[in-house]
Length: 133
Image (cartoon, rainbow, N blue to C red):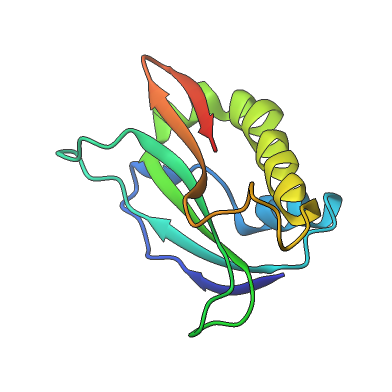
């Protein structure tokens, strides 16, 4: 369930790697009903980060009594998005859904649950790679 969306307008030469509807679809396909916060981010030419899709899982705590996912969707140059779109849709999105579903299937007292759980997709040399923990 998407709880909030922050999505700034982009310059013409940039494109977000995912639409909100694509995230909603993978959440629905994996029966993920946890709160999800979407934060779209612009591409900055001087930014060293090559992370283009980042998801953090947050456990309940004293301030927020429910678990949630924070999803950051980054923009790239439109030509770069065209290069990797099929891999993002065919590999990264299903992997994200599987990762999130696995987390939510763990019992609340599981030792595998921690505050550093993340799913990251990086763009480098016209390709993507995934690091998840």
